[in-house]
Image 1: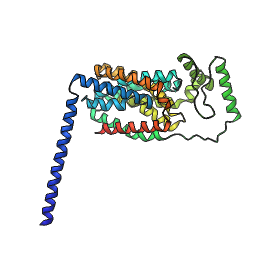
Image 2: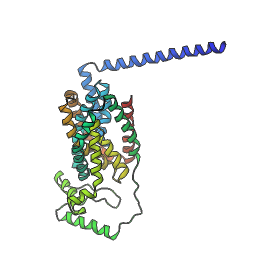
Image 3: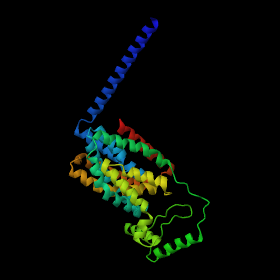
Image 4: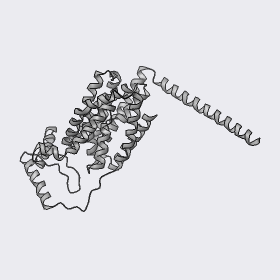
Length: 342
């Protein structure tokens, strides 16, 4: 009897504690909703979220969706409006960050163009799939994808530090350098420590350098596209994901380049930003036509993100150590994925 009485007593106490916790949670949620009930407070929250997203976008190359999505969820938007508004805001953030990185010669422009244009061409197919997916299912898919991709950015392809280039490889590099020098362009081939060389000159010179370097390396544009066809396949995957879920292309590009190439993380982030921009332009126009973009909120998010993204890419991002950037990317993916699954 004493045991039964004790069990009933403990069960009653647990019930009281659970009700108290539930009431506290409901009260906190009500206070949070009340704090964002006025237009001014919602605008201020959007501007703060956009500024933080712009910084995250420039450092990680993820486009800022990992911040925009939870912020719009907090503002109470529906799933499809969250996706559409996020796409519009990410387009602004990635445009500013991409420009800053390209001006400094950090972005792998041919790689980004291949992935981005292949992705943009495939987004309509993803849009067809999206018509058969509910809002909650879309959130779960995106959240799960973010969590699964988080560990991959911590993986870095190992470089054989003892590797010595062959005479043929040295001769090939010299041939490319000489061909570029005839056009007055410096080669961006990595130096002896494996770091890419930032070119001198305006944006046109940087674009010319990178595309001509690819041309002379492979012999023709067709051969260049064929020899780097994995970027075409990656672009197709990015387009399908962007078209179906609306976001996530930058995550895929960052994860793939981190695991499968020996590029520096800053170059990966810059390249992923430009890829995201190109595919987002196609996706954004589709969401606008469907009425999924809340223009006022998207404008505040995009403008605030653009300023912070450009400033961070120009003045801060390249000074952050690579391990710290990789850890920051993984943490952002994990936190955003968990928030989407709630």
